Image (cartoon, rainbow, N blue to C red; front, top):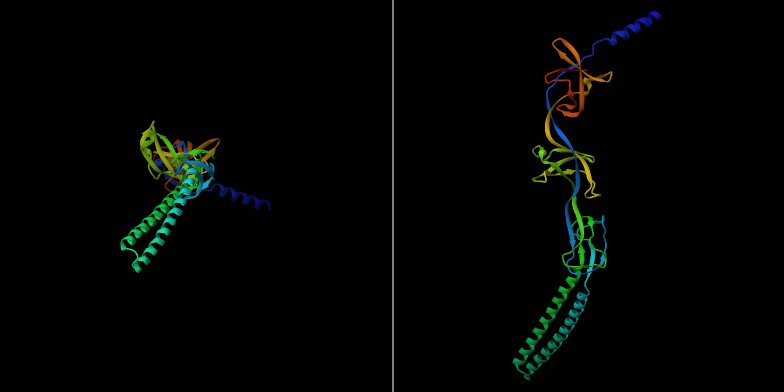
Length: 320
């Protein structure tokens, strides 16, 4: 039995000393984006005011800051007592004009009957017929005036100009507003991030470049050509970006330029006694060198670990 255990131990020792097959990688510089940490500001695609179309007193207000609004929704009501009085006066004018039209039509009918009997002249009939036309036109004019006044009263409804969220309501119930004055400000069209990047990085900014955001991935969709106060304005589209708080600051990692780095797979780095070691192949055989690894970078065939110091371009690295 002891002899059997000795043979098993010897087999295990032999297996443990067999050479491990390794791959060889010739280290060459690769280009990776240089990322810069910045704060972006959440902005709305557009901000439009819901304006009053007439002057008057704000008698109803159905939204507040943060409310959702739909395009065409009545969000407030403006009333002008003068328009109500004007509508009542127009109604009275219509009633008077209709009465005059009825009298003129009755008179015309009577004169036409008399003309048939030879008891009046055709000139009299023509005169009465003209009176009927004048009365009919007076009715049409009064009804048109009523429609104008009714439209002005309907214009007291303040409508939401687009689907979105109410950002601000600068007026309150009972306030007197003038025509064209904003009653509410509405944001719509989704949100994006707006960045102000130092101008020294302007040449490294490209439309379509990927951006790392706390909420996920984004991409640069617009780089403004004008530099203001030493800053380049950049718009970044981010899928799933929250529109709860317009103006919120979000941390962003932006690619500002390309740089060359040396990188190896994580498997090529061996940790021993607090040191990071990499085996390289030389003309004299394999040697281990101490390296200082950096962050993860994207290689042509997958993620790699950047090597800050310890390797040179052209070194042949052994990868288990």
